[in-house]
Length: 340
Image (cartoon, rainbow, N blue to C red; front, side):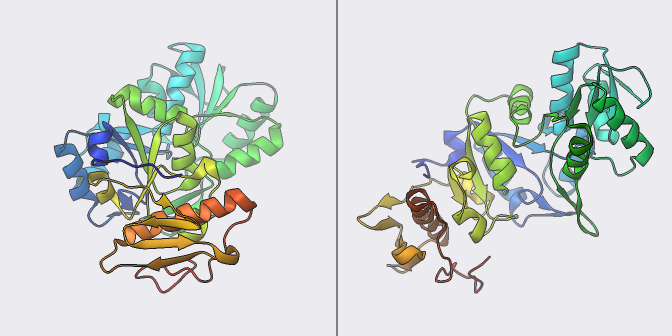
């Protein structure tokens, strides 16, 4: 269930590990208010790291993009799945090892900066590293696939099946991983979320002893936090809506919920269990006959607390019955669509 923080999260934790797309920006535009919220937690003394599963761009390019959006960032503030992959490869094969680079410039730069030698698909190598690369040729993919099936070790930067592009949601690196797995019968080591290495690499690079993962996706950001043994904040500015959140199993449940990054600068109270439901801040939620019902009991109730009450009631029902709640009666404050 949700946790309580008596003070702002920016005081309770010393490192905010911020996912990017859906949290800090959406496509080429900043999430409204994100720059100000990030400036606020930095002023409060919280370290900030920007972490991404996308291995196609070097950290410098990501930092430049953030700075253009009004979120000042240096190269050292950004940690990518390509960097986490490079760390794993150095630890396994040592500095100077030749690694087949099946990906874009972000992966190549990360390998080079880690002291590895990126090579082509026909060259002698200790392992294959793969990542998203829109310029990859089918010949390179075929050659790498054959070598993996013949026994060359394989490490994937991430398994994201989709990636946002200017022309819409497109296949991500995870689609290539699935294809290679099917052909080779090999499951790769994975560096990116929800696997643990990316979060460990972030703490190693940026510092902090009390990290908090902040994301918008349950199956990467929040599950990744569980795998790394750290607390998490789910923000509702990205892909997760009512249906996914209410049906989340324990491994996908966040420690805290907030509408946006302003939640880092506030205290958080967990809903209290009542005889037949959950209550917090003027909201009361229960699940009669398996239907989620959240009622406002006082004027001025915070809409953010609606989500916390709804999640607590829905998760309690799911744990007790094994079935997700019926959402036909649920009404998100300010949202006419109950299925959002």
